[in-house]
Image (tube, rainbow, N blue to C red; front, side, top):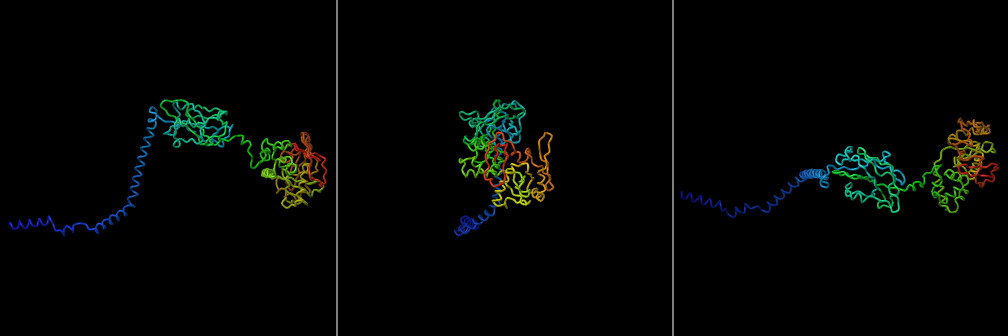
Length: 479
């Protein structure tokens, strides 16, 4: 038994202490450690593409949720933190945009309707406040700097709003004229007749805004001010003096480039009773040298070129006028437009457009136009070139009727009977016709006119025994 106990004790000692070789066998080798690290790295690469998007999504959702809760708490506590006694936050709001452009002296109007509307709105619900003492508030319209935006867009203090109100320049009238105070009814106010007295070019941003602020005080309620988008205010004088592109025949002559209103060139033309673009163009085509002399040496060649080019951009109607002098036996004539510009010639009853005429033929045509103005009762109008060409085969027979007797109207005035040319009825133009060139050039009226001679018409074979007068600008051509 003692021997058995001895053997068990020896076995226990052997198992408890172990040999050095057993200890070395149990320690991890460097090779094994490297293998373990490689295994872990492989697992990480496999899991990262899967886990990373999931983790990012979860984190993003949690952050957004936390921000929403934080912002909600800020809105709910905003008024209490700044104004502990306030029960709600209201604001003013422009309901429609301004109608642009804006000029000094002109009423400021809204875009969607003629009147600008301002409303009292609940900040949180966005609804118009139609009840309560605030819905009948008194509101003032002011002018703000164009670059006033607040710290973060629409966030500003009352003091910041006041500091950005624009006052008139020294020695000037109040910047806004008219009724700038409006009384709300059911939470809405209509801006009355207001206008700017000065442009915005002198301010730091060269722009204005309109602002609205409540003049009354309401306990427990904060009413935030309103502002419009920024805009430019231009001098109405600049618009009044603006050139037209293209000009119209009835525009005043100073609408042309290089002719300033009430300037030297304008006064020179006015003295010769050249008042409209139509007057300018007609004299340009009838006697351009005369027109050039009227403007004088103060207008350089370049300025003259610019003015003439601008005038010639005027859009004319398509009507054409035919005149055949008696000496042509009704086979040769000139075709021209409403301002006396030669459009072509009628040669042996065939219409030849100006693009196919020689310079000598163009000069002859211009002389015939001058004769046409003197013998306006013999001019035949056509709606356009097509109707002129369609009737060309019957010109000879039609023109023979130009000597038809006049008929009396009930008032005793004279007019020529209508003629039928090429299947179309054309009323023969009379001196009093309002819709043709004779509305400007009448025959025989000489009162209060300034005479000047026509140049370069020698050799035409015509003797002018009558005076050609121009009632609209009252200049006349005599011989």
